[in-house]
Image (cartoon, rainbow, N blue to C red; front, top):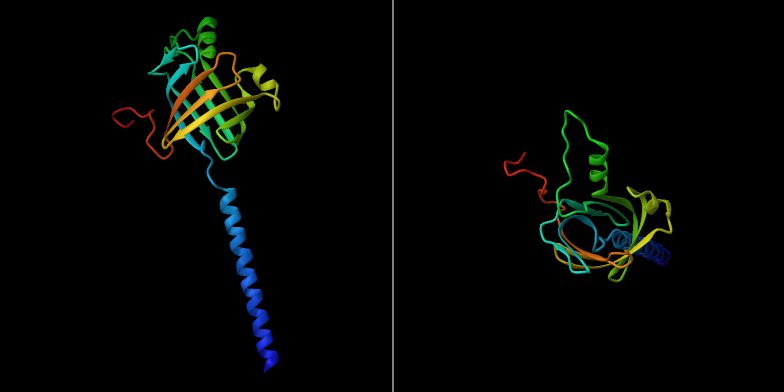
Length: 179
């Protein structure tokens, strides 16, 4: 009978050890998948250059962050992008004006405290993209609930952009009648 108790005791130890390892794996996986403070889809709510110029009612822009990747696209002017006559097609000047007013890049990012660094894998600007992976750009950020403030640290003309989280919400791209 002593041998049977010892076998039962060993099985119990194995069972407890298996459960402990399983729980540790689940806990480690949940930590690895924890959302970063930047994660989500964010629309531009205002811009401010560090030279004092600000745009309180900016043109459209969206910043999307996953756990390790980002994609940014925004109109970089205070005025709407120029439209052209559909029948005549775009002139070279209209194409250039439309192209110049759009910023777009995507890649990876890393967070360190309240600073994050982006590495553009693809970008509208060929020179910016061609430096991958040494084309890092550094930003500081502050998140306050559904609002995110990002300040550039490495651009020649530093700026601050204020963003509003739209993840899981109806987007601003819907018209008032819902279409």
